[in-house]
Image 1 (cartoon, rainbow, N blue to C red):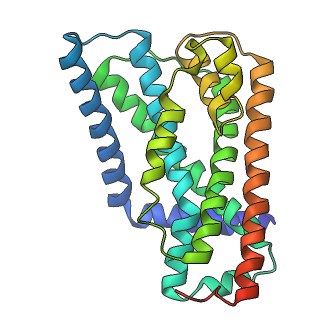
Image 2: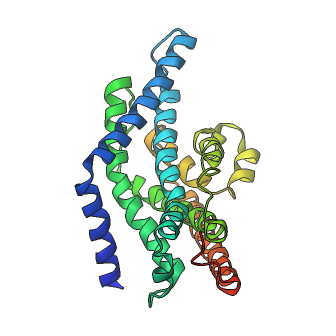
Length: 256
């Protein structure tokens, strides 16, 4: 297992180093997108300072970028490997297929966090945001990644069946944007409690509490966030394995 992790980290890191233009362009586009939103909001509101509202928007945007990239990893990998004819070789590995794609998603998300950290600091420089960092933010970030990998495995299961689903993946970005940006914690206790079962919601609420409102770490919310992340990861892995069995039974693993 250690050798598998080492190989995946090495592969992802070498790809990052070999194609730095992809990293820079992705970073530039995401910074430009947020700055465009900031300029538009400033024009509509007639002011350039928003206080906690801006900080909450920065946190939500950073979480959305991370989740959005993690969500698309597995289906995009499956589609690309099916197109190049190497998908069947993945199924011949001695490791469980869902484990392979989950580890790949984890490795890619880990490298994406480097970009997210740079992204946040650039946004702070451009907008004057006052979000704060603490070691505790690692906890909600981990739970966000777990849930997003689970959702990615669900999408990957459908990619395994139909191979070409990249055209519909962008439509899920708006749903993910709602989950990351909506200030559920300000909608009342009953509403907040009702939406905690949605993927990644407890984690992003906890992120805002720590980075925007500078509240003490809520251990109950930490448990809820990790329960949410682990639950969606298990659901994703289960559904992905069911999709794998269906693809094998129908003989469509190598189709495209």
